[in-house]
Length: 276
Image 1 (cartoon, rainbow, N blue to C red):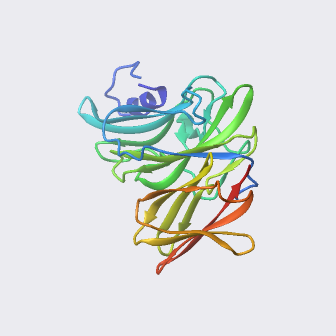
Image 2 (image 1 turned 45 degrees about the vertical axis):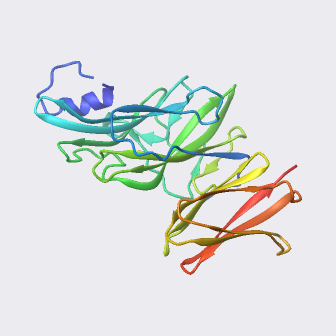
Image 3 (image 1 turned 90 degrees about the vertical axis):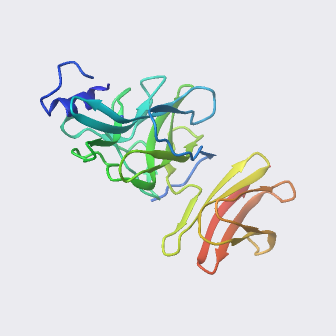
């Protein structure tokens, strides 16, 4: 058991000693869809932010574990591999909490970071009650974990987007991203568009010679259009809730394009850059 959890538990006095988680100009962000599977059991889910076969972080969960007469549920984030890798968070009263970051926030060198190899607690409950001030207590819908990690000799910034259940007994990783350019910030708004009045959210990612789209939050079928900066529509289709689509970029010239998603509930637009 990690030290921060030990400190919380020992406050109850019944445990033996020693019982031990403004969008800036973006450089070259890369997005990967997450498994988006609800985790409801004890697990250690690894995150390889840049897909180099080295696990950079992990989400640890332990549900319904008992110590004495109390039952505990815990979700936390931990850095792996080296001491440069850090989780965004703060340490009030010596308890390391992982920050719960909102949409359209920059993650960069000015972000508050936990110490080397420090595990940041997301959500922590005792007998179903959130007795401490972990930022993710009470659940979260599409909020972000901030990451700082090492690629070669360079520091990069990234995030993971998570749902956490209101009772703290399950979570899901919806996706993650990082900036390929060292030391440049990455916004939590990168490739995540949300219309808050009428829920419409789409994840958009450049992957090789294609554009990958997922209707992450959508209540009714929507129209997808892509047009160039001259207003010429170069692609149109329909997309259903939770559907994934791939648009080949081979027929299109290099340059900036606008992806537009719309139905009777509203409209969302995202810019995409096609390079050669």
